[in-house]
Length: 509
Ligand SMILES: Cc1cc2nc3c(=O)[nH]c(=O)nc-3n(C[C@H](O)[C@H](O)[C@H](O)COP(=O)(O)OP(=O)(O)OC[C@H]3O[C@@H](n4cnc5c(N)ncnc54)[C@H](O)[C@@H]3O)c2cc1C
Ligand SMILES: *[C@@H]1O[C@H](CO)[C@@H](O)[C@H](O)[C@H]1NC(C)=O
Ligand SMILES: *[C@@H]1O[C@H](CO)[C@@H](O)[C@H](O)[C@H]1NC(C)=O
Image (tube, rainbow, N blue to C red; front, side):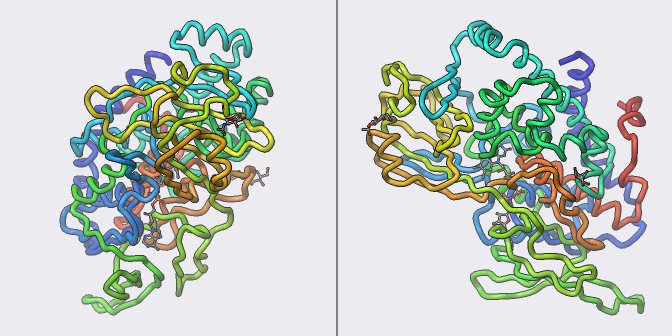
């Protein structure tokens, strides 16, 4: 990490606090402000969108957020005994500046850190176990993989440096009309290529060894995205950054950010499922016509509909994720875009691990590994196995060795059978399985990612997941969509899809 990058990041972190004032000041009421905005979905994407829309459009606009399920979406917890545990999105990178900004703004602390220890399991035995000593790890990896390891850090670092540019662009109010344009603004053609080839292709081309990819990179993509090194190179880099140190989580559960943002921006939560969206044209006061979006929705008190000036869809438009009919649009908007979401079953087990399952001869009372990653071996039924901590760390909490009853989290593509559980655990008193359609099944090369702009004032936030799915990606997309909505409403084309921002903004900090 070079010094210039560090200071740029520090400036960005400070600078983010000033974001609110800029855009309100720069919208001199060229046109009446919108009266009603709808956001469909109250995950981190939808709630961040509501927050940024409030920032862009000011106090007067009414913001309704539709959510039939629990606030948080794929950020969710389950209760086991007296404690809550994350079952969906769990860790956040130290340079995820929007997530950091949210908790600072909401006054929620980070969860206390509990030291972790990683190992890699190849289906038969443990092939690598982290030592408590950095230098030991370093020498072991150097011995086995030469400089691949160091180079991986540099590789991820260089992607991250370009990725960080988005915060500066957004701070200056710039937005992008498609995922491709957003990627291009961050990292130029190299990001587009990265997103359209596999991580394996990208890393082999950069001189990494196949053995290193199989032994070290695949376990990381498997734990983060349940998939092999054939995911796209961009989400691959995001995944590898997820193996950095300094990862954090939100005290009390990540989903607290979602309810916090809704409350903070004074949006109204409508506990209903949106079933269809259509365009309606109405005569307006001035004698001309105005068009609105009509949302039909079903809640506990039956079905209803309302008109909105602007709509943001903040749920994936994919089979099994949502089922919204769009009518009256030309060209037509599909209910489901091509491609599917990958299943990851998150199984939380409170019990005694069968350490022999991992092919180790270590005594359970000595076995302190917290995260077991797995290689891409035939017949492997699990993606990872982790000893997890509650969302709030009680005073005096210490991670227990495997000889004690504790809570384990298993990620697997299929639900675990009783037989499989019996093999992995000697005993248990509680099992809770959540089958997630977790993130896209990444299969590059792809023709096109779905659009951010579905229609004039109708936006689609989760298109960004086809570059990479993560909390911060949804937050970045939320900010982008709020800026887009604002600039398009006020016909400020100069703030959309500007080329070469990196060089143009260089002198501005
Ligand atoms: C097991 C797992 C582990 C993960 N680990 C991490 C991690 O460690 N770090 C990380 O950054 N990311 C992680 N992710 C990814 C991360 O959780 C997601 O990228 C992120 O939470 C997506 O947020 P979202 O708001 O865009 O979508 P969602 O959270 O899916 O929110 C969409 C919401 O829309 C609602 N909805 C759907 N249809 C309708 C409708 N018709 N009307 C109204 N509402 C509707 C849904 O109920 C849902 O609440 C993980 C995901 C999973 C599943
Ligand atoms: C524990 O795992 C080992 C190795 O897979 C297996 O032979 C043994 O039967 C398991 N123990 C139990 C109680 O199932
Ligand atoms: C991705 O690559 C394929 C073929 O290699 C090409 O047809 C397609 O246009 C590319 N897509 C993008 C977005 O660059």
